[in-house]
Length: 354
Image (cartoon, rainbow, N blue to C red):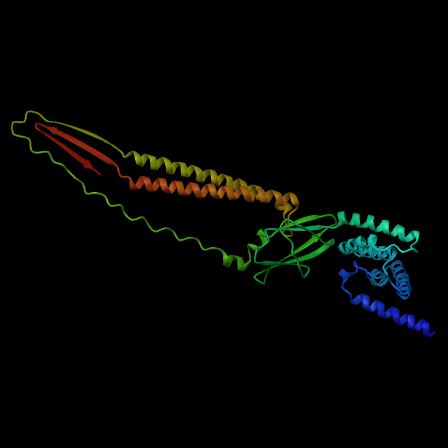
């Protein structure tokens, strides 16, 4: 009677210690071999876990199975705990625990059931790799912090993070302040990319950090022009027999060059506008594949390509506008020129008009 009571107290302390250990430690069983007392305690816990499992009490069964595995890890207890984790939808924890089962020391007393459990653990862990949903982030803000279900998520852009199937909350903090929350529901084997460019752009902190538009350049100072110079011919003598005059005029050729440059700039602006409209249409064409919860891989690739085309369109339009402005300035600053020549007896007169 005394021995039985002592055994029950020992089991209770083992269970309590097991529950206090963080869940990430279940995949790392003790390095030293268990004592005989630990083996007996683990067997009792394992039997209770199996009974609770058959009764459908999965959470309680998992607590017992994990306590048994932590007390005296064996392939059988590890396989039982991993199976319960799978039944509860905790696929990531199940995979990590099952991966540790093949590395357990082989006991001389290990039964065929234990050897089978090793092979089953490997097969189940491999199948879980394909079933676990994966989450990826694009355009992570440099001054932002990402929380996944309340825990910091240190995930590089383009990398994949395995998560359990079901609902998850992704919180974006910018400069330590909450910016927005994205609720994501993932099915088994689903891959989802969350494009943070479409999310953090609405954050007040980001809007305040936007660069103010550059001030418009001051108007160009008027170009000083030389005063009109008129070389008047001397008055013809009274006996002049004849006089002749000729005039030749035409616009300054640089004005035509400026006009041509401005026209080329306008054409470039039109081409850039067409590219921008095409990029916008391509971006909007995958709206059904990019809900607020994130894009599918195909939708993300399409929108990324659309952004690249929009960047090209912006460059073409800016260059075109600059070229057009330069042509207009050249046309305005180069005045037209007309020259007249007068010829009389014994005199020649030249007059230039600007």
